[in-house]
Image (cartoon, rainbow, N blue to C red; front, side, top):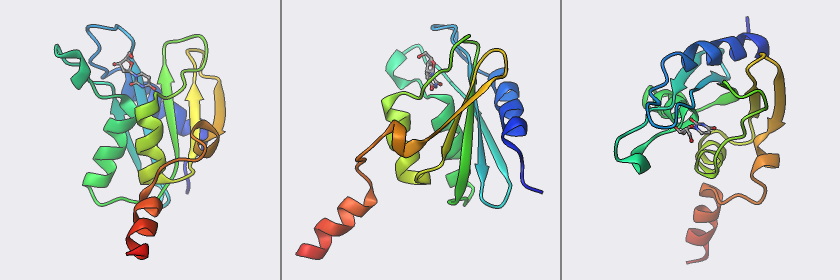
Length: 138
Ligand code: THU
């Protein structure tokens, strides 16, 4: 049976407990649902060389891709914020390029959810289609 978004939100909340965020203290967990019902989780992993930090969303999708999964349905992201945490620009780009227009489910500290399609979060995105079109012209 396919996972519900509430179940995905719980998986993201659990993944948040593994966050390595000694610098920002901002814990984030993600749970990415594949089209065949598998869930890949991730958390943010910070580094003492700050810019090498990776967000929870990218941890999750890189885990999935590196295990051969390429078709996705939705990603839930949980933080300790009372509001909804939107994804950073880098994660918007990586997600739309590798997963397409999936549902992005923001989960706040009270476990409330807000669902926004990625195309709304990153309209007019640069993707592999642009590269393919440029190759065709030559
Ligand atoms: N962060 C995420 O993991 N995902 C988001 O959607 C927003 C930001 C992380 C990166 C960094 O470890 C911390 O939150 C503060 O920016």
